[in-house]
Length: 175
Length: 180
Image (tube, rainbow over all chains, first blue to last red):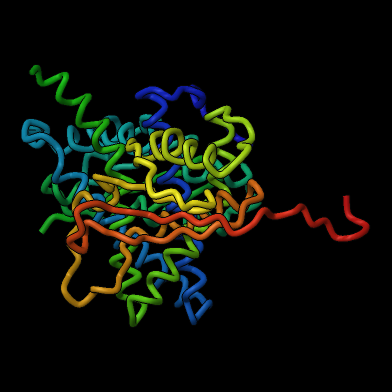
């Protein structure tokens, strides 16, 4: 069984860890529930469930973004927003920072997490690759939602080469 | 307060709000998917059960509590250790039945409903019903069949939120013949 570092603490830090666990369990159950409900298990059905999860993540991301203090919203550049996402938001939500951020400086950003917490419970490597998108949809929405509150319209997709590493691709939508 | 300190507190708050916000999004989605509140309640209970049967392992690993000898000890552990650990609140334990097989958990503040108002057309919805499923599932894994249900709910205008817990029976380990 996987254990988190400092998992035995019951103090403030332990409470945060426990919150994270609650979220993880809820997330896993949501993925299972939304999938099971789908009457059409074919490729079309798969897209519908992914978009439902993504939509839920979006609303949560928006709500989280709305709770940020005023001063965090005064970013000078788009890149600063993405860095904030990779450091502060990721740390608050997943207790770790994003492992790398790359950009082509033309509105496309690739965020890489070598050990994404929502994928860790699944066996590492290639075994459950097909299942991975279900576990990333909510988080893609969450990123899109937080960005939206910070004034940035985007499209967020994710890809997995080998669990538990994954990449989130953020493409800024300019109107 | 310095800006730096603000950042830290905001991160912490975000972390604990993630669960309640996600839960809210889930309930909203279920209300869209199912036609009536009763079905949503059942679904929340079922999902809670599935979470509870796995959460118990996490709880036992973190908390180092030993085996409970009776339902009173169980009540204490649930209120003072489990709720505190996962939700940051400590319900009070009241209204023990004379036989000692029923008690109530009273929550002045239910953290799940921090940002929630029930819309008018969902009067039968038991918003936090996931919790009942979690309690039921977790306790089943430690050999206790229980019933958990909300009897008061601040979302419905009651002064407090009250979960009634009833001990049904001890579950004996039933291993099929021939299996280890």
